Image (cartoon, rainbow, N blue to C red; front, side):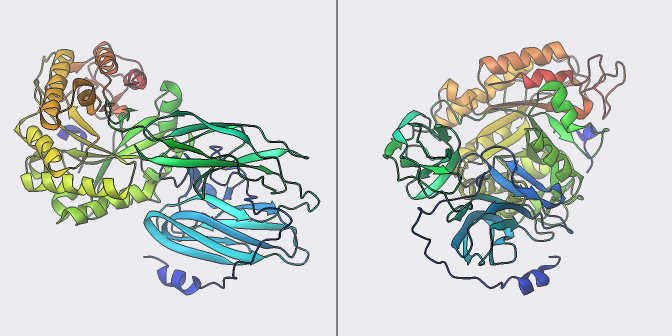
Length: 561
C-alpha cells in the first residue's frame, strides 16, 4: 500500500537422493473378474474435506488451486522436520495386482504403499503423473497408500490419486448398471455441468467417476457434477462410470461432447473482496476470528519483498513456508477462505529492481505461487524504484506474462496510485505497456487516497475509477462493462496519513458503487486498523475514528461485483 507510515521495510537433499531409488515392481494385468476401478475414497479431495486421508503433523489441507482435475486438491505443507505424509488405508484382496497412480506437483513428491513400492517426481511448476504397480501378499487384506513431500522443500500438491484393482471383501463381483442419459445441463467459458440417470447395483452404487476423454477428472456420489478449470472455446467429450464399494465399475455411459463458451465477454469473471492483513506489525488480529465475525473470505497478505537479490520472503526476512505466515494462511484456508499475496509496496527492498531479467523475476513469483498453490497474485507497484521506472515496469509486466502462461487460471493483479481524475503519467504508461507487451493483466487496482486533507473520498474515488475505466477502454478497445470488470479499488479505512477521512458510511457508498458497476476487486488498508480509536491519530492498530470492530471488513464482505 502507498503509505510509508504503515510499512517496514537444500537441507537433507543428499539424504533424499540417497533414499529415492526405491525398488519398483512392474505393473501386472488386473484380474478379469471385475473391471479395473479406483477403490480409493475421496481420490481427488472433491468432498472438500481430508477424510479418509490422514496427514502427519496436521500439515495436510484441501485447496482449490492448483488442481489437476475437478475443483479440489491435497496440499501438504512440509516443514524442516515433517514430510507431511498423507495416507489412507483401504481393503484389498490377497495375492492380487494393483496399480497406484496420481498427479503431483512440487519439489520431491513421493507416492507409494507402506511396506512396498513407491516412486517420486520433482515438478515444482506443473502437475506430473506418477504410477507404480504392486502385488498384495498371500494373506493381505488391507493396504495403506501415501503421498508425501520432503523436508524443507516447500508445499506439495496431489490430486486424482487412483488405486486400480478389485476392492476387498472378495464376494461381490457384480458391476453396477450403466449410468443413463448423460447430458450437459450448463456451461461457461471454464466449466461444464453434467447430469445422468442413476445406476443400480446388487449392493449399492457408491460413486460415479467422470472422464474427459480417457482421463478421470472427477468422482462424485450424486448424479450430477460440474467439471471446472476448462479452457474457453474448447471441445470436450465426457463419459461416466458407476462404481460400488467392492471396486466393481460399470461399462462406460454414452458420451456427450460440449464446447465451452468463448472467454472475455464482460471481463474475466474474477471477483474478490480482500482487505489487507499484515503480520509484520499492528497487533495482527486472528484471521479466522475476523472471518467468523464478518463473513470475509479473502485477505490480501502483505508483503513479499526481497531477502537479498532475487529471493522472495515475507517482509524480506521471514521464510515463505514453515513460519507464522504459513500457519495463518493454513488456518484461513481451513476456514473456507484464501489469500492473495501483495508483492512489493511503497517501501522496502523489492523484487522488481533486484531481479535482473523478466525470467528471473518470474522465477521469484513462481516460488511464491508454488509455496501456496495460489489462485492470484498482486504486485503492488509504487515509488520511484518500480512504478516510476520504465525498465522495472516492463520487467514486472513481462514477468507476469510468463507466470500467466506457466500457471493456467492464475489471476494477475497490479496495484498502483492514482490522481483524483485517473492514472498519472506512470499509470497510463503501465496500462499502455500492459497492452503492448501482451501481459494479460486481469485486474488494474488503484489506490484512491493521499489526495490531501479534506478530500471528498467518495467523489474522488468514483472520479479516479472512471478515469481508469476510460483509459482501459482507450488502451484495449473494451466497452464499459469489460473495462469495469478489470478494475479494482483499494482504499484506506478511517484516517489516512494526510488526514483524509473515510468513514464506514463513505466506505459503504464506495462498496455499493463498486457493486453497481461490477468491478473486479475491493480492498482496503488494513484489517489491522479496522478497530476504533476516536482521536487516536494515524496508527498501525486502529483507524483513528469511532467505529465498531471489523466494521470496514464487514462492509467489504458485502462486495459481490
